[in-house]
Image (cartoon, rainbow, N blue to C red):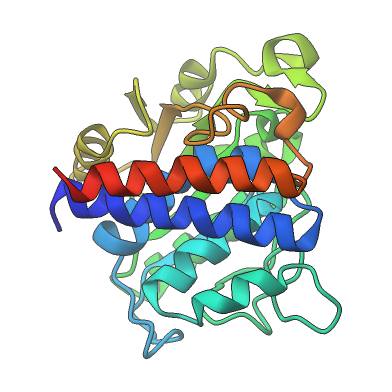
Length: 279
């Protein structure tokens, strides 16, 4: 799939994020928007998946370790055809299968329930080990927030993955620089992120702009060709990417836009989509 088409899909993913969070009157738009491009690349280019067979044995696995970014995850699953896009408007509603955090028992395409920070990567490591033990070909991807790296369990999982040489595992860090309480470097700095993963025997790929599809392609191609050790892709992104007033604004970590803010966001995304169609 060409870069322009991926950009168009990512813009639709961003629309779905805003639709869902606005309808729910709650949720986490900032980190969902910063990860919209990597969600799109994973589900439309990188991963071996089939919406018609969401539990096929040889599918690649994905674990959203930063489970509060479910609005972005749900939006890309809907765009990929796992369930109707219209259902995004039921996010967090009573009786909806689209809960505030991913639920593998009720949502097609979700390989692991997540939400308690630090635990998703451990589940992903277990999946990768299982594939190795069973001589299976599938790969495992997990997306972490940079603030999530403050959880000690992350590094226990990394130590295990490096020791076991799980080269079928790709850990992706959405390094947008902000968490719920402010800048990660002020709250409890996890830096240097790259050198920490290297110390746990990971191959580390640094992506200067994780919202750029050319750079994402290069990173995932390099990860696929890495043998004998797991890969960590540390990508710099913009929190709230695509909505002007949300970009790099920590207050949009976990709140929903009101009706006026919703209208502004959707207008911006509509214009961005129109511009892409004219290219």
